[in-house]
Image (cartoon, rainbow, N blue to C red; front, top):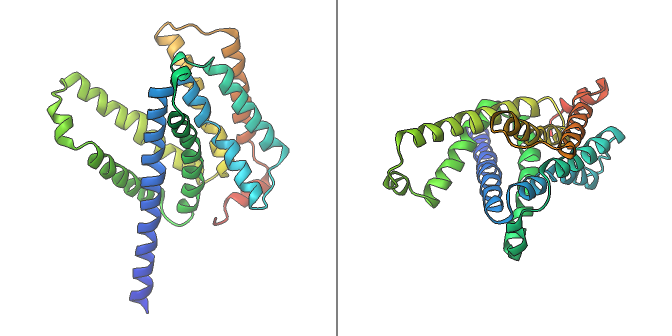
Length: 246
């Protein structure tokens, strides 16, 4: 009996990590980068950060109606992101229906990743989920783009260092911190907090790359910051709810 329970638990863990690795990490990255190449950066960011609204709709379907604070946070996050990233890139004017499907698929994949990660983190340690999901996603992309093709491109040392920096500082570390927050917050609140990413990107580009930052973008950043504050301040009752298993 104990062996059967152990085998069932192992199969369950494999199922969770496979689902998160393929339909979470791999799907989010693949659809998002494809969307950027076809629709442009600004529009792709805006579409992907519709995820908090999708999560709220999902919770409503399950009979869990969000508070007015959550709704205000979602509206402020989406509107602020729209103002922050600016208008539609000219590349989107020639996009095919498939390109738009992939763009909106990135929002659904991101929403699914947040919700299902919340479920996985209620059962397993964050480091365990992070290791296996990234290993599975890495194996998937290694099949899509075999390592010998990458090494055959003969990239220079500087570019390899940049790949390493992106892998550690822009992927591994953010996802680890993301899981840390997701263990303590609701899925929709975590999605709202994630919209701080384009704010940091735009402000960093203005400070370090000399890119312009207009008043509309500043107002958009202000709305996103207000949204993150709304998502951050939980009432004691809400904090207790987030501790339950999902």
